[in-house]
Length: 360
Length: 266
Ligand code: HEM
Image (tube, rainbow over all chains, first blue to last red; front, side):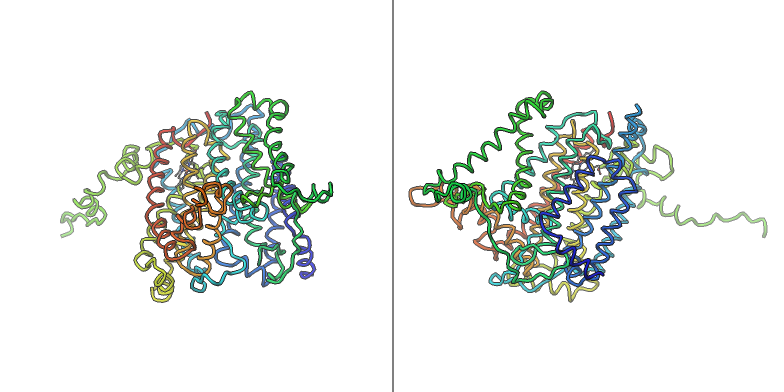
């Protein structure tokens, strides 16, 4: 019974199925937040996740990965962030309902009133600090910090993984070269986060939980946080084995697993497969289609959207803020787009100029 | 005999709290009047990070999840456990690993390393959760934009603190995690020797950006993760980044008050 379950999970699990199911769940969540956060839906989902871990803990391979000392925080992270996402969305929906009835948000009832920091706030802080301190000591007694063999520059472990909080970036390396996944994307994440308050400036919705009035902003943020960051960390930690090959959760990490590399560049698709001319000699001819495609991607949608779907935002934000916002969104979407191209067509690079280490 | 006046009972609490030593530390009595409660905050340098009064909605656990406050507390515990670790640890290739082994084997009740390592993981999580709550309550909006930006820098520095500390045990896990991480710097456009555009930076035939002069070299103090990297990461981890973090935290806390305290609906 359990064996069939494991095999079923292993054969279902792949980057594309996991990413797509997460996307479906995510879209349901932001489309029907009130329903999705009701106990009738939340509890079964929690039950399934817990049951999955419970069944998983009967599998020695699963146990060895999930309980690796440095991986325990990620399991904790999953439940903690899951809980707080649920909590904030539930509060937001409650406030949305209140405001639909013409009442102020719940925080408003108490925001005019002031309380003394001592004892009311210090008391909370004290309890939290105490609970954390006790928890940390228990955690430290139960779980020894890992220490492996002394560092040896000649023996590289397989797989070699970055610390867990950077594994989302390492997972992006599957789809983009290091200059994008390791340098450009982190830079843009930082810039993008900093830009949020300069783009979303409506103060009517500041200082309390709400969703309806902030739907687009919250959707983008949750998409980045959950799908492009947490999910990629989970995949990178638990499902990437030797040679960064993908393994199902109950699959043994076989160093000799052979995965055929059939990835093809856009230029090869065009000049060899479709036109059957053979690859042009000069790189600027060879890569012209890819370069044009990338330029179009960054130039056409902003212009079209400003006139159609985003007309409202364009008017509200003005050209500078609008362009920054759309550029950041396009960069953000570039990751899932390339992921799906990879899964659908084995596309390797859209632009490939190894002469200059310039591959997209 | 029976009518002899009763000797007042010796009251230890009073004896202590009315003595000069106590009074020199705590300047006012403790009754539950608003005045004393305000003074508790005003006359204590640590509590004084807070204002005397806050919005009732902002003092709710359900609103802040206390995640920012907890991040700060976790940071303090990391400073304490980190200082204790520094007594035992020498950042050189010959000693580093053995010092960690010794720490595990010879120090009684040795959980200091665990407290520090798990605390570092915990701080990353609490900072993410704090950012998440600030976002979900829309607390980054004007006038708090700049404090959000300072927060983002603190977030990056928290992860860099953890990253630089990861190398110090000098075991296989440490060395290769940092190798993987720092290899990315090779591909920095123009500044990394395998980055796009780096080959354009040359004078005649002489390449300016090589494996011996790019950003990765600057970070590691060498072409690979070796003695130079260990020393650099040690100093970044124990001195440079914490100093910046402390300064930014001071600005962060000060800004919270200048921006009108914990946010609330308008
Ligand atoms: C080392 C990390 C950090 C520490 C110690 C810290 C500490 C705090 C504390 C104690 C507060 C008071 C309210 C609360 O507890 O929620 C606060 C508020 C705030 N934090 Fe942080 N923080 C950190 C990182 C961040 C990050 C990563 C962000 C955002 C990206 C951020 C943005 C803010 C903002 C905008 C406020 C004002 C919130 C309001 O008025 O409701 N902070 N921070």
